[in-house]
Length: 187
Figure 1 (cartoon, rainbow, N blue to C red):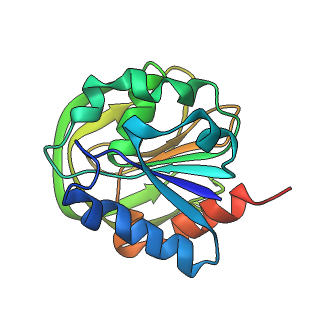
Figure 2 (figure 1 turned 90 degrees about the vertical axis):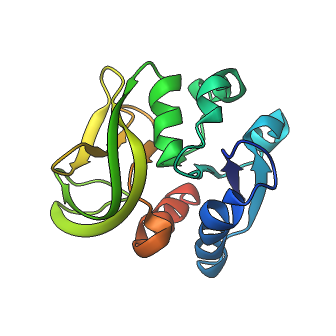
């Protein structure tokens, strides 16, 4: 089961339809079971019973999760794969000791995969959609796997299957979410 964490300011907000629902569509279409939970309500059993966790994005100015990082502290200890999308990447960055800097991007962006990665594939360029006000300065030791002209577009933990992407794969790069789900179900 893939746990989808809604990082919006409150459970059931309109952002859910724009940022969580498209991810549920991809996960379902790929044949995986999923459960959706607001980040403030994730029970320890939900984390322990998950094959993987996706931290979904939020609306452009919805950064409430940055004020409630204690609700995401479990990320430091979880053993299952994690994918952070946009705000989810920002959450991973902050929880693991990285920082954010102001970088506004809205629309299509050229992304350069700088090294082979389990969820991004081989080095190449591709077009992605993004909408964000911040960029991540990765935590010490994390591996940057993709960049654009303005910021880090993807990173991963050096030792665990924990990934972040700044762009929104649920808009036009479904394969990123599909590869992540496949990674979660490998023995």
